[in-house]
Length: 305
Image (cartoon, rainbow, N blue to C red; front, side):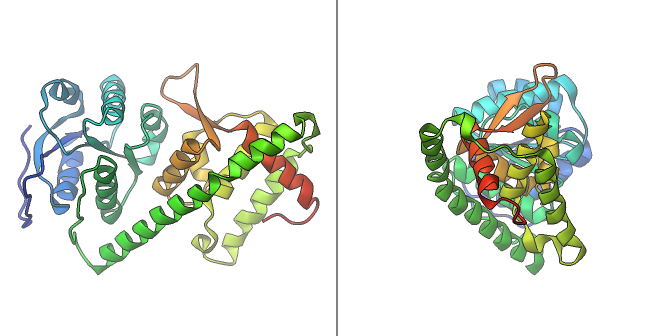
């Protein structure tokens, strides 16, 4: 399947093209619009099931964009595993776009931090993901004006969001270390007991705020995910990626950014489901769990919101 031309006036420069793989013609068309609006050229567009073979012979590429609107089964799994490995090796950047229904099987195959996974994303967020992915690959990309002032504003918001995540998690680099030192000084047996009902009550109280104020006014995905993982740990439940993204109470792509960086900082741990190769569970690192339990022990019966 050859790349489809558009009427957009785009200056490509001399950057290598983007390889595009999609699960349908509609998916390929949508991805191509995003790529070309971002100032890049589509070198080839082809079905997901043919992309792995193409990568065996692909020359230079700025990135690969995988657009999914349906479950591609084994070929999809193989392609995502290959792309994750190639991105880790620095061969190219990668963006994977998928609907929420595919979050678990897709995220289970993407171990590499530099792969940008976006879920049910709008056009501005899609363009921003491509810019972020190519920046990770040390190939600067300027995102063009892709539609309107509204999209430009959304891009600014996304930039602010990514910056906030980066600065917050930079501060966390001291947090887990401090928690580790505390854990070493105090035996694990001395960690205060916290009931699942206490944590559930806090989570309910946080969700109740949306009845009275706009939900995004209090968006705090890192804290919401920490609480959900503590609740699950106490109840001895496993939490898949899709459930944790829902618990974050923000768009799935935003939740995935937080999840990725919390894992990289050692606050969360990803574990493959031993019974299902298309699912990954997330849990608290031991130091993070102990820090949360001590926090609840210190605040006592004060309302923790």
